[in-house]
Length: 208
Image 1 (cartoon, rainbow, N blue to C red):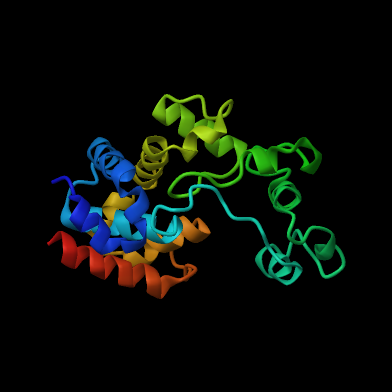
Image 2 (image 1 turned 90 degrees about the vertical axis):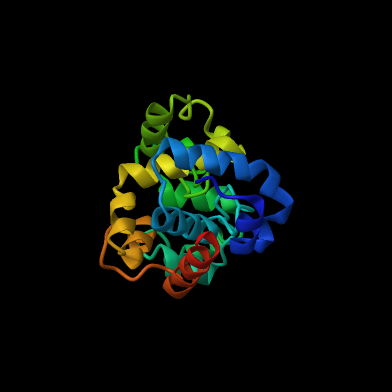
């Protein structure tokens, strides 16, 4: 069943300014990628709400302090170099993401060009290429397409289905869903695990 605007805002009250754009986009995406039961929709909307700041953040925020850089990317930033990058999002992205995920080296600018976008933060040139192929969109050439509501929702639902998260939702493995989205593998404790579970519980109540 499609969700209503009232339901969406009960789950994500901070989304009110953008609900009109996202409600049809989310419903289309959930239909297309078979997020089509109570537990699947509740799990999907909970994770989307957490990852996107309730639909308000479609581009990764990379405005980190020096201390946060060392904590977040200890293999990329050290106490010696972090100050040279702190509070400079473009430089941070190029350093953090350069030379991996299909990106060219730091100097190529790919880290910034292919920083996280969409409701579940597609990140890296190879992931943009793969998502573009899956959605029929030229995302490698036009990465900012993922800043549009419909494409942001479709990319999230495509990623969800591709990684088997419908099946994990069916099995009640909500913590593993958050872990796969946040860390890339099940079994690890995801960032803000308690908030993700709380959002899932709210979504279950609302959608029921």
